[in-house]
Image (cartoon, rainbow, N blue to C red; front, side):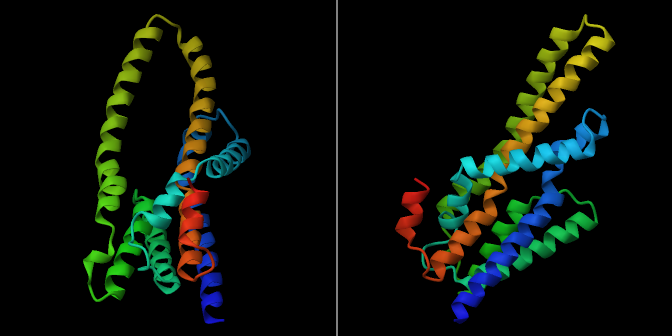
Length: 221
């Protein structure tokens, strides 16, 4: 009975975390479209909501990483997961209130690591360090570098293509392209960030004995 109650609490906390992630991170994909008045706030919100949902439903890699790739098997308990979610929620609210750019993913992963290590008497071996470095640290360092290089090259290419175009023509073209880029970013956010809560809930179900590890692996490929 206690286990079931904690699972319900974890699911509620995961949904709260997802909701906070919505106004913490999701709006990034549509902020420019609203700021430039290419889309109305309602149009942008509807587009972001639909494409975030589609992205979350079509991909499961991030959910698998959160559910099985960071903490060693058998370490996480529903209580640990609940504490990790509380920590991530509090940090997200603090950074949102003070307008500090911060990743919800890193808040959640940090909460899982901190709660797991502390609950096992500061035993750092509970962490799957290979998965942590391969899936968290390396992408954390490499993704901004890739973004900078690709952004620079793409902007250089666009400048070369449109350098003889009129201001009116450039505005018309990029109004359309801005909608496409916002839509793609919303979809990408869904396929990446929206799965975090799915992974946490799955982890709690496994920890509580409601779902077998092999079922998760076969389900997520």
